[in-house]
Length: 134
Image (cartoon, rainbow, N blue to C red; front, side, top):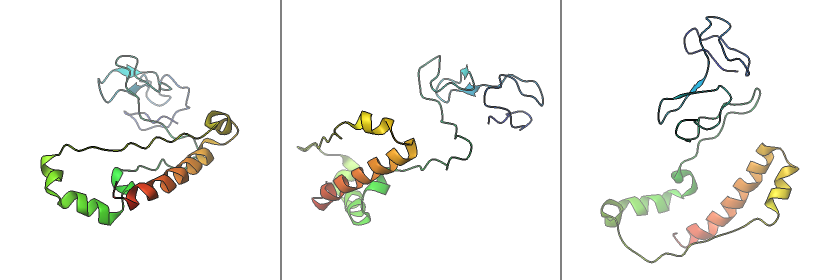
């Protein structure tokens, strides 16, 4: 439910105007400050994604940073190296993995369930990458 920025009243998800004070409700783009419809997912001015609004009763989204995926000992080693401050050029190996029939599998599952499955998939892959300090 969108909360009015002026009077803080909760309004129905499809409301265009606040039921408490009457101002136009919308979503302001963090990149260009353009106002968008309350249900817009992308800015109609610059195309940037707008912040997701949680569904009623849904758990809050989990914010993760790269440090969440990197073991502490490896992150410490990276941050202590001279190249962490200066940068470096090196040859790298890129891992690409695909989940066969992922689109069909995801259609039959709740988005949160599918997210948990993929999160575990990435954990397993990251274990191997981190074992070789990648």
